[in-house]
Amino acid sequence: MTESVQSFNNDFSRVFSEIRQDFKGYLQYIGGLGYGGVALSEESLRILNDWGKEAMAETLDMIRKDLGTCRRCKLHKGRKHIVFGAGNPRANLVLVGEAPGYEEDLKGQPFVGQAGQLLTRILRAIGLTREDVYICNIIKCRPPGNRNPEADEISTCIPFLRRQLRAIKPRLICALGTIAAQTLLGTNTPISRLRGHFHTYEGIHLLPTYHPAFLLRNPSKKADVWKDMQKLQEAYEKA
Ligand code: URA
Ligand code: URA
Image 1 (cartoon, rainbow, N blue to C red):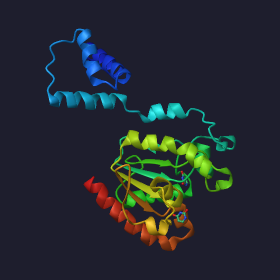
Image 2 (image 1 turned 120 degrees about the vertical axis):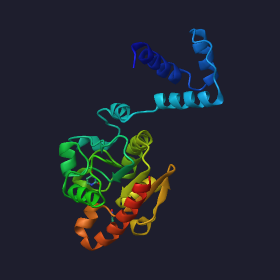
Image 3 (image 1 turned 60 degrees about the horizontal axis):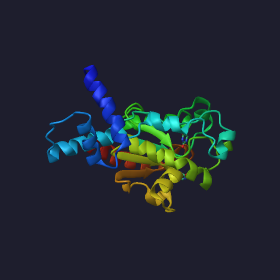
Image 4 (image 1 turned 45 degrees about the horizontal axis):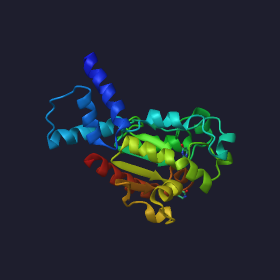
């Protein structure tokens, strides 16, 4: 990209976010800057509009920066690291767990303990690596003693996950366990009834399944998760 095109792009992104409410105003503005004589068909208007939206879209880096050294809820007191999420920022599949555990809190990475190792094997069984997908949690800081997240902690933290999902725009979400499935779907229906069926989260297909930590305690449920993973793989290959 030449410097002038790059510089036009930079100007465009900045200008667009300043006047995003008024596309006509933008056209007048660039007219005033001397970018005259541009024939704008419906099609080019649409392309410019999409381009503008992309220029305005939040990136994961912007969201991470906004989170900062978060003290928005009481969980910051006991945590060692915030666990933001990891993997491919353009993943077609995002896996959402509950909250960091002991190992995750130490390392600042999601699903790196025993349950995480099982999750890695489950992914491999459907032909995926951790680098193919994005992995994150409903809650970004470890609850003391791994207790369940409390309602105020979820409501404080969830806007960041929602923004992450809007930034990644995956085709599929897999919700791991009760907390992830019920929170994202806004329901109290038990995981045993939610799992195995596709639901919708902001227009994205969402499949709940059991949490890998639950599988470690209840190995007989692996058969159910295997069925769910075959559904997920089929949908992934079509996505
Ligand atoms: N359990 C979770 O829900 N998330 C993690 O990151 C680790 C264990
Ligand atoms: N309870 C949970 O929290 N998760 C499961 O996957 C199953 C039961």
